[in-house]
Image 1: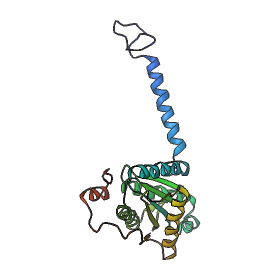
Image 2 (image 1 turned 180 degrees about the horizontal axis):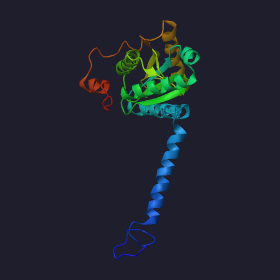
Image 3 (image 1 turned 60 degrees about the vertical axis):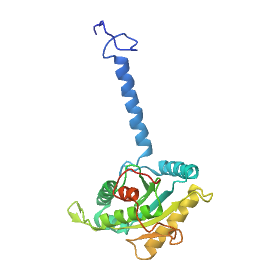
Image 4 (image 1 turned 30 degrees about the horizontal axis):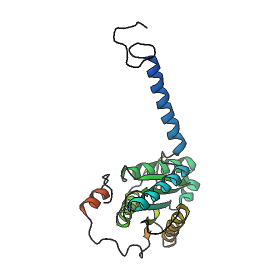
Length: 227
């Protein structure tokens, strides 16, 4: 490689298009790629359970500091074992990928979607009040119900059950308690017939009766957060 009169700034070899800089950039990109693999589910591309718990703890702490609500949606695909039994696990995997792609299109960029395990999922909604979270869950539910994807030549009906809860920072709630509370709502949705969104009506009593302009933007996928 020829030396030039205008070397790259900071290059230890004193050359343009510095190979050391190129290698450092490549290593940084590889580190970023490996970090992404560690925290994501390989099948769906959603975050994995480990990252989910860390992110939920961070958002709950943010709520305690700022007063901005953190909402949580727990989701279970309805009777998913039947799909695996009837069509095989590969079709089941395609159904999971289809569902996650569809839901990603219906979530904001700030929302944190995770594969909780098997056909169970969770979505953390930072800076989001209960009214917004319920609307988001209903959007996910209805979008899935409306579609019958063709998976390996099979038209399959997919539905899901949802439990929705909110943390406002008024009580000293930990991650496990928040998860358990929301999971109970999910179990209630399944017990009441599946393919529905359930939330605690007591925590919904102080929900605003009107949707603000900011909340309207958030419901349609904007990145705005609760004031």
